[in-house]
Length: 243
Image 1 (cartoon, helix red, strand yellow):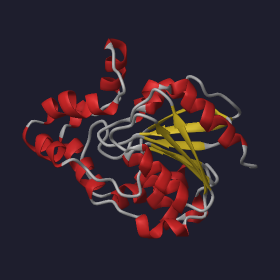
Image 2 (cartoon, one colour; image 1 turned 135 degrees about the horizontal axis):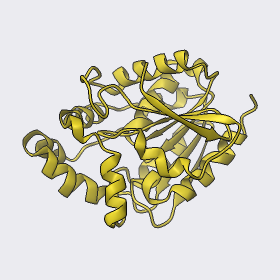
Image 3 (cartoon, one colour; image 1 turned 45 degrees about the horizontal axis):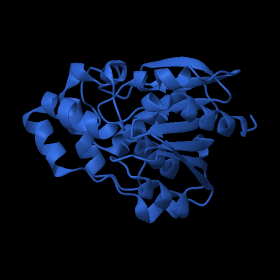
Image 4 (cartoon, helix red, strand yellow; image 1 turned 90 degrees about the vertical axis):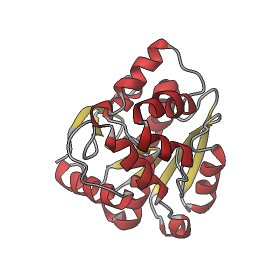
């Protein structure tokens, strides 16, 4: 079973971090959430340490589905950020009967990756994470936010970064979005450079039961940059599910 932490929320939700991350990504956002149900923030296999056993988004979706079945949560909402949103989409396509809804944060139906990032992660992973990926992920970053960002990344397992970005590179469900039946909330930072707002707009156009919100003055790392705004969107969505 995946490692996880729990917090109160308005409805049962499983929170899934992105490429090279860990569940501390959600710490700030969870500070603005509360309620009688459970928010469960998972660490994907190999995050923040351990063996790399999943090499594709589909592999991660299998591991997440197994966690959902074992968690005791009945049809929770799945909330994913970046690669976590891709895993969420894959789970919604493969096992729609086992989730109540979706929240997609910094998402895309196809996750193209800048070749310079892949090359950098092969040759100089730490330098690439600190000097390329992190600056691209934030609208603006100060010392405190930098510490939070570092804690939310899996620096104890540097190979997992390249593994995850290659998994993202192979993800494309554009032709399948019409099959998604789950009620979906799509959230994106207005200044997201990693998964631009047009990608979220595309998802909103193609997923039948979806709505989209765009957060001002935020880049890709919404859970860290704008945690209160993000929680303020997620909580009412969770409340809308009758359990």
